[in-house]
Amino acid sequence: MSETPTVAIVDDDMAVREALADLMEVIDLQCRTFEGCDDFFGAFAPGAFACVITDVKLIGPSGFELQARLRVLDPDLPVIVITSFSDPATRARALHLGALAFLTKPVNDEELHRWLTAALGQGRAST
Image (cartoon, rainbow, N blue to C red):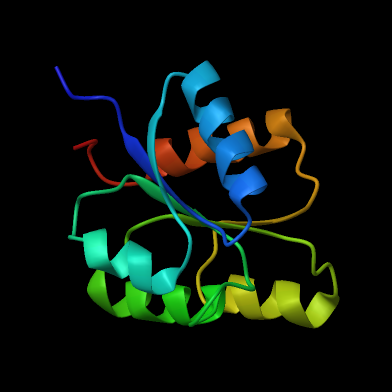
């Protein structure tokens, strides 16, 4: 029997982190929250997370930089980008860097849940 997957939430807005953490609890997923890219990589190890949810704009390195590093360190780790930047260039860049989904804030909980289900189903075995 595998453990419940852990989702990493990386967003510099505490209210967003808390809302997403509450959603993870409701849908029976574990999560860890991080204020920025540096905090996340301080706790990162390959296989530690089943999915990453990140904003584009973060304190310090951006969500794009987070995605680029993950492509090297853990290329199979699904990433879902949630941001208030809805322009086509931002969306294209996130998807080019390997994002499974690009959602705009405020995010629809049901839509995020569908993408999380897809991410956890497509990815690695849960750890």
